[in-house]
Length: 227
Image 1 (spheres, rainbow, N blue to C red):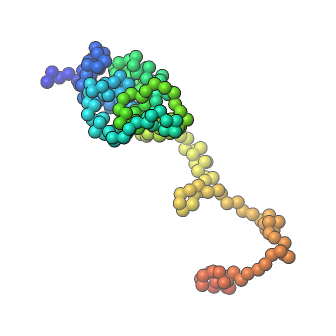
Image 2: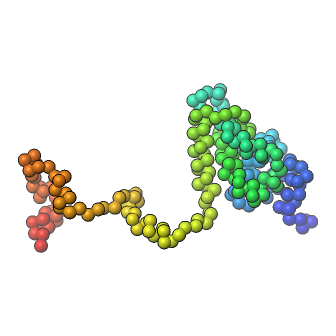
Image 3: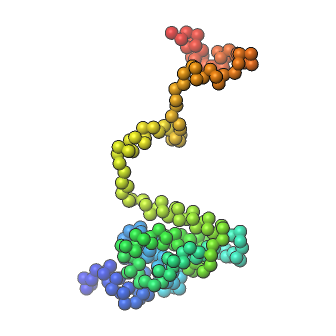
């Protein structure tokens, strides 16, 4: 043991050569959910995972379903192509792993990186374990990519401190009501007899029934003896 910090060693090695590192040195950068997405996207885009440089057997174990990829069918959403991820891909190809996990870059690219990784995982279920192929999205591909992006945004926001004003929150909740299923319902408004009467049918078109025939014994006693 030379006492060298593993993370510092990983940074040093990454600056020398973009591919001269081990899987464990790459994982040393994964100290947060946001940075992990950038690391995984960088490894996929640069071919460090899919080319067998690190551990492609792991990907084959996780994603090899034995299914055949589509033959460019318009009604198929998989495998997803690069589409709007082109800007992310070009940036990842132009930087080292150490640059990809800098705080400012992570803040800008983590959502897009995780979305790319999720799309790669979906493709891998069809035995397409390679970086997303170039090409625009079809309607179905775009719909799927947008759904993935929305889920990723919710995921990456977990654990982040939310800023809110207590006074405004109390004011908003004061006017909310929920039912027994937890669903929000409208607030009941009191109506006067004068407001209700116009909504009732005319006497000549109405009828009457004995409500006592349709209530329980307990309610029947209350109706007969309201006092």
